[in-house]
Length: 120
Image 1 (tube, rainbow, N blue to C red):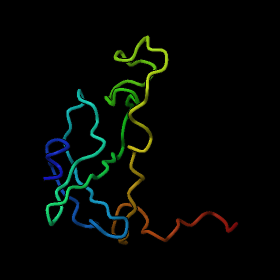
Image 2 (image 1 turned 180 degrees about the vertical axis):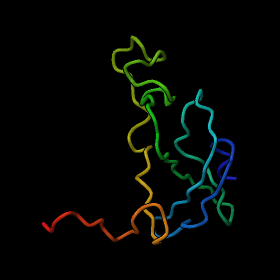
Image 3 (image 1 turned 90 degrees about the vertical axis):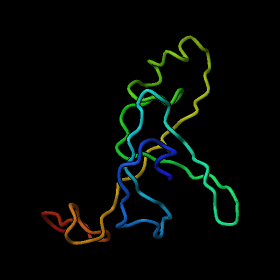
């Protein structure tokens, strides 16, 4: 249901969902012609409503003014010519790189650093 609020739901990563950082990792197909979703409204138990921030992994070039992919702020047609347009988006939309925890994963396990050629 959360994925459908952002775009077309593809896959849920059940491996590390809702642990210490209280995040849920899902894959969603989004329409690149529309602005990125910043927050979604969730209905909690007891009828309460709350907002959840949306962050994006591997986010390509996008505009901090209109929130659309494919161009930067200086090339935005929607805000071209305005003296001081207000930014509605920022670096906070970018998710930090995913950290793997198991030995068999693609990267080094969390908490173990790769060894270097010599000790510093």
